[in-house]
Image 1 (tube, one colour):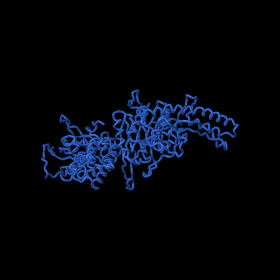
Image 2: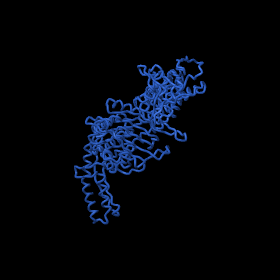
Image 3: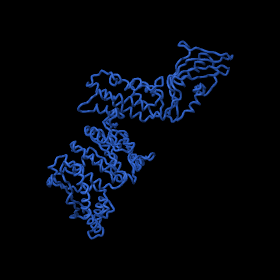
Image 4: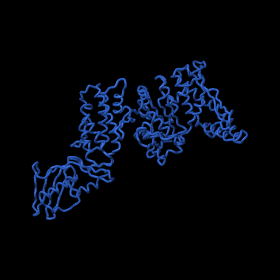
Length: 638
């Protein structure tokens, strides 16, 4: 058995850029999302991914603002053991893409998952009761719900939808009604005439108890009645059709209720529709393989008191499904979260509508997904509360979010001070400064850094007026709100950019800041100059944009100088601010070039022995034994 551990959606409907939904342990997921945040696009992306593994389901629904023609939905699955725990190393990813060569979701287990999974949104619920006749015929709805059900107990080997469709096609393909094809199709129809009512009786055996057990307070007894298949054969043979009838009988306080769809309130009608759908799914999904239950805003028609029973059904009857539930109702989300969070197999996310600039600088909507209850989740919740927004509270949580983001996503060394202590989170200004400096040290990093530089600069400008804990802004002013929204966008942008950088993987410290190193220059006439330099920054080696490794920029200062002249006498020079030699350099290369240039052009010593630059710099170890920088770099562990 498998569980989904990650879903990535790129350029599909609302998802203008790739967004990852992480489900690391194959948990169930509850998502709150404001209107327009991308909930329904998520729902439709998962439906498209599964259904496209079996059928041609139309074109990939590209985001209309992106300007791109490529898109992809990638779902990662992992195997689970008998205890439901993820088996390490078993994750594999499958995709449906605009590029046929990249589409890999046509897999037997995904096709089985498609047939056994359930997708229910409010529009589907309405089909159960939004009909004008007092006694609506629900055959089309019931057949769609049971289409993938294989009634093996009654001798069937194909699912119900395929069996009915095949019988109809066989009759239509005949030349005349005495043709063997028509006779065979008609015989199959008669067989299915006997099977269909029995299948509906089996469905009632699930539906009626479910309604009674979980919605006792409604005093409703619900069952499907008068189930039959009908052959429509009053025109050309090519127009022969198999249709059917099935109706809902509702008894209220023991009495049959005529015109239930006009007499019952929306809560009772929604409860009936939900139980009809879930009982059909439970009966049809007999496989033990991966099954998904995705419920998108199905609680709209239910009052709060009747929403908990739906959660109870899902918990009790569908624990072998991986469940994804979305809602736009924040109070209901909080109530459901409180009920579910004691369980270890649930994750809670919140979705908001963010924005991104396209190639011509226009602001376009994009979904933002955050962990519910996190500091950034609270920052969004307080700022987006339509009835009672609390901007100061949002700014406070946003500040904490920035502190965590910079300390976690940036490589450990840059966020330490000159005493090698991690810069305290509350010193956000200093933390931002350290991060800006680090990014400037690695200009050719393998991931472009321009956006990070700009975002950190914008963040720095907002620190005092908005995010500083002693800010004196009046919290309900439009300026405060606009700056807060801008800061949220900066967070989202930084989080997205930094997730691509992986500094801890692609960057290593070669020499710690404050350490002294030697730079030695030798002349062929016997003289030697030794410069002692102190590093004000860490010296890093990092993966560069050209596929190689580069040394970072770092500030070095000359603190001492000694040497040997051509006569073999020891020389020493105390370095002061008035010394003719430059005192500070911004990189190893800069130091090498400028000191050699000084010796040649100002001291007119031109017999400098050519050496590998990295061999001219020496670094002491803990025992104060010096090693060439080239050897130190070779010893760096990657």
